[in-house]
Image (tube, rainbow, N blue to C red; front, top):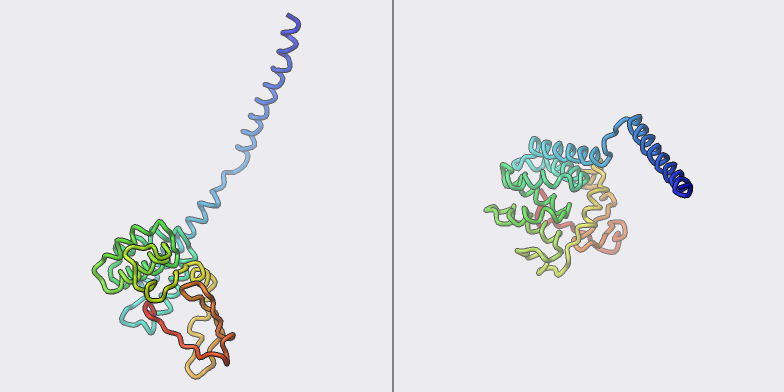
Length: 223
């Protein structure tokens, strides 16, 4: 009987200690004010930024006055790419329900720069739209996401024989300084800049000075 009593004492002490620690932890939790998840705050902030960028584009961009509003397109695209994945659902909706083909094409192009695989089904549907420009940008976006595995394929990969890599282009957009827009002026020396081509190779203007003639050609999407 004594042996049983002696063994019960340590077990009882351990149990009491554990219970005390649990109660103390609960008390500490109650004392601390509840804080919203930083991750949730980040996502909410990105969603707000995406909605504001789309609202600005819808309000200020004009297909009939591209010379004046091309900056709006660039600004909104930069903001959406910086918003990241939280912008995808809103761009998806715009691509399906945008009131003009130009709005839907803008959404498709931006989704291509984000290269989020979750946008693949919506882009595949957009590629079937009866429009001159929406399928073009949707196919280009699919090609960036799937690296030449998109269906249907565009002619770009077959024509140029390169694999589109979205990462260098996305990085260039993320680092783009909006204050430098329209800094090139006719009759003046071009400001130095670096651009990544579709295959991911970076070219810097100053490195080509005196060596090659540089001609910038925008095959599509230069509006």
